[in-house]
Length: 232
Image (cartoon, rainbow, N blue to C red; front, side):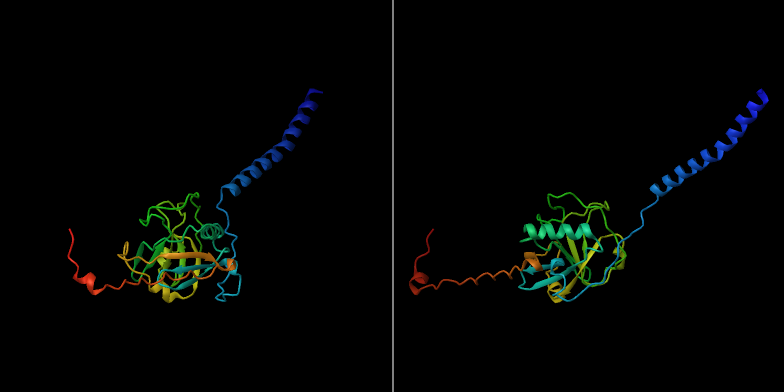
């Protein structure tokens, strides 16, 4: 009887062992899957240059040089960055901000309310959304500090292709109208007479171009005023 019981116990252990090993392997595979980098599931849609298409994803910049620039925002490339820029534009955050760093042949950077390159909004920094879209002429990309996850409100527009920025800065849009106005932005770090964003808006909100400031008219000086004695 004892031999029979031992035989049955041994058979049971043999039957259980493969099941235990399989369960351990399954746990290890599940952990490996969890630890593996997530596959990028984004679909990188092409840019539409048609201003009538999807106006809710067109950023309009009315500049102090009197020109309006249109930028196609690409949520399929960088959804969180697009949402941030749209939120700040609708809050009026960018209105009055200068292009504080403008380098010939490279790019024009803006979005810092302090005008120093060190400021941002009160919203939390963004996690990077680097993508395979190249930094070509007219690319609009998010500026950041040393940390990859430090983008906040500042962005830059590329004058000429700069592929060394690819997969290092979040590319989230492209100028689709009036790149010539971007070319006319005053150069400098900061410029002596910086170009400003007078108004940033989303095309679907239908904000009109801001009225140009009235020209300053100098008062006429009479002959009596010219001949008046100079006071202390």
